[in-house]
Length: 166
Image (cartoon, rainbow, N blue to C red; front, top):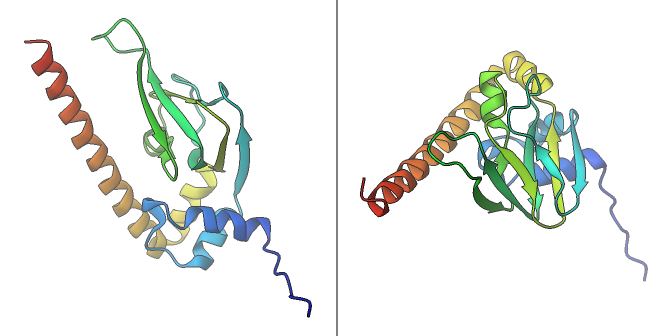
C-alpha cells in the first residue's frame, strides 16, 4: 500500500521554524504564515556574517533555526579586544536595531553551518501596526526577551567587576 506523502510549502516550513521562537509563542499558525510571507530561509557557512556591527538602515530580524553563531562586539570602551558569546538554536537576532532603527550593536558570525530565517523588518513592523491584536503579544514577548537579556548582561557585568576587583 502506498502512503500519501504530504508536501509542505516554503511558507509553511518557515512558519514551522518560527513557531518555537519565544517572541512568536502566542501567535496562531495562520499569523506565522503571514510573517513567513515576508521572510526567507537562508543557509550560511562557517565564518559567514549574518549581521555586521555598526551596519545601518537595515532592520531585518534573524531567527536561528539550526547551527551555532557567535555574537561579537568590538566597540566597547571597556575592552580593547573582541567580546564574544555563543548562541545556538531558535534564537532571534537583530531585534534591537529593528526596534530602535539604529545601527547594529554587534556582529553575528557563524561558527558552523547555519540555517536561519530572515524576516523583513520593515514589512514585519507594518504588519504589527496593521494588526494590533498581533502586535501587542509580539511586543510584550519582545520586551520580556530583552528584559531577560538585560538581566543576563547585568549578571555578567557584576561577575566581570567582581573578578577584576574594581
